[in-house]
Length: 189
Image (cartoon, rainbow, N blue to C red; front, side):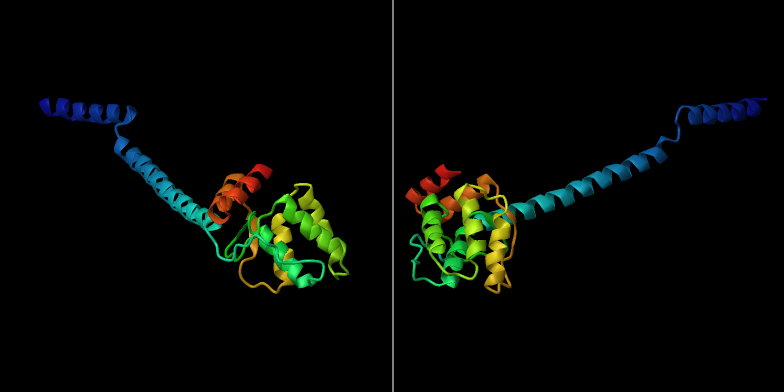
């Protein structure tokens, strides 16, 4: 009789355990797996964020070939003007490689505009269309403008793939242009 009571007690304990989630360790394994997936996803996101910050630093870092005098006039070739316009875009675009920068300020834009307007350049209409946008402060397609120059020049490295944010551009300006020019460029934004 005692054995029957003991067996019945064990069966009841098992049934009560099953009813009240006595098999929680199995569920904990699933929860543990979900937690592990979240940890792995966070690690991947952290890596992506770190890589993005490195790319952002690369975009705003000091580059070589900065110049303040545009070095062109009414007798300059179309190629020389395109080179200047290309360097002006580096202040605003994201590209794997950049070499050279000229501040994109109203004075510079107007100087280049006057040269192109008085020229007989083959690409005159395209260049004036781009300069018209810049004169109006419209830079929403400056990466396309960059790539137009880059393609014209036979570029193979450094194609623009986006436009820097305002804060990225400000950092680029501070890192690359003299203080008085940096103030002037920053005030234009």
